[in-house]
Length: 66
Image (cartoon, rainbow, N blue to C red; front, side, top):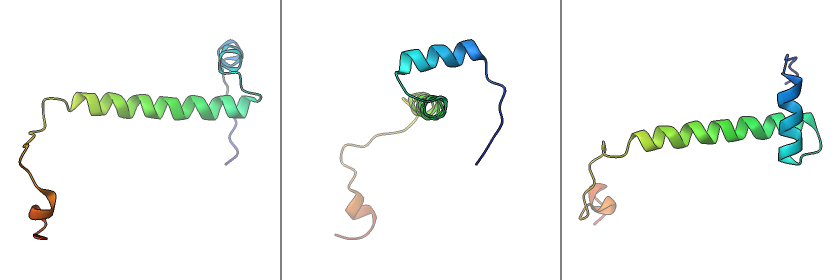
């Protein structure tokens, strides 16, 4: 998908330098991937302490496979 964006040149130059990538496209795609991973990790961390864990839970038994 072709998209035109107004990206801060200084930020992009820094990202290119730090990332060691060859193109702006690679740099932007990597930045988006890392952004998504970071947000998903943050969402997962917010679940800590909110989900009950049962040591004796058996997924096969729960499905009726035993």
